[in-house]
Length: 202
Image (cartoon, rainbow, N blue to C red):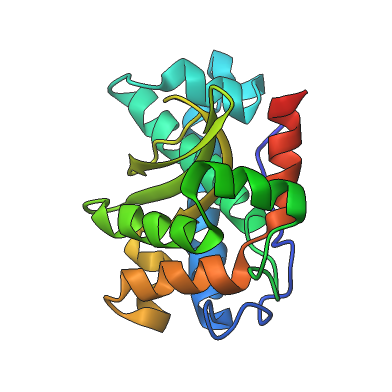
């Protein structure tokens, strides 16, 4: 079956002013949708056609030629699906107590986590992603370039912010730091993070 564009798990106008409906129309309706379309084109008629998204990503990681094109589009579909789930209207604020304790154990405080996450996101040169991951029982911050993600590196992805320019430029221009800080403080879906962390702890 062909891959389909995941519907946004929130109303398009519910993330403003951090992420406007206009940005989502471009980011989700055009960029994300194009990755889905290209992925279906590239896997059609290949042994990958009937595999799930994560299997395709792992099978084509670090390859070249057509497989690299498949990876780029499959990974960007997965990354964007994950990003939308990482966001929630009226999110941010204080994480639920169990998650808050884990964040404090790793970063001393939620504020310190925010500052370190913003620093890492700004330090990611060019296009890419900033992630909160669980690795060896501990929480860490990681960044990846272009379409890469913890699926092919190390750690279990818990949360992410897209730092490709199309994620923020219409609303924040070149102010990547301001965008990421606002996402952490106002849109972070801590319930989603907690659910992902529960999967690791099982």
